[in-house]
Length: 350
Image 1: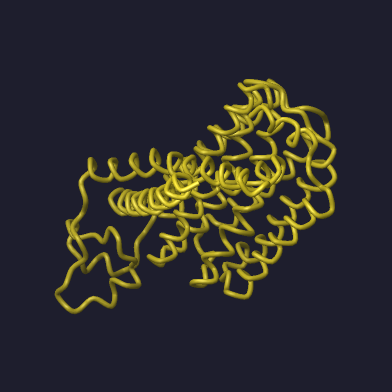
Image 2: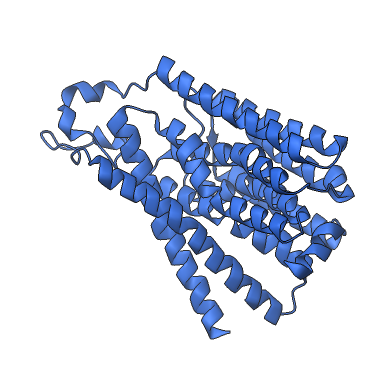
């Protein structure tokens, strides 16, 4: 029992450190190349924090329990919005600003609707996976084209600061408060930026795995069922990189990374994670997904929609409402019996 608690604490420490490295690296990358931090969060950060979902889903497919893959993605997308956005919002209101937030939010919503349609048509097989990966490619190409056509323009303060003195880990609002003659930290090297991003992306799945495995062992000791472990610890555990990244970003007042990370991760989960997994093995669709879980996922996206479209803030009240909604979802899933038999039975051999 004691080693499990030590692994749990160690995993949380790894997540916090690597989440901070990823946020710092992403912010530095955006500043160095004149890119929007939101664009970096929607692509590089989102794909990096979705790595645990990919590892768990592929492992499930290879282990002969591919039904876990769909539950992992759907559960993570629900947790990303209701839990991962809800917790940071209690600490500091999160502004859903940025030119590309609204249409990326619509892309996430469209991907959610598309997943529901594909699930109602039948199992997710090879051709559905290929279709999802083709859409992912189109999304990445579109994001690159949009970034080229609409280059990121920092606030006017940039004109007053030499090119070799861009801020790497400080927002432009904070930079305005610097004493006269005091410049932000110098531009970081490409190697240092790459090292931070690589270490962050590589370390997040390791930290998540430590937390998931140790948490599962502790849950078994207290007699928690396999189904509860799979739909709670595994789903939330694979979302821990998003939580670590979002918490470190909100402490640094980098709202663009928080919002972009969640929206981008949900898009990556559907198009990339399910696309790759469906190529490996067909994903069966249990009835509970069609009647309950998929609709909760869509409902969570709809809750976020007005805030992102208006560019408003996710305040403490909204954050508390998101967390309450996640609690209601867990209660409905377990107390009312909405636990997928496919996942419950499959976990015994996972």
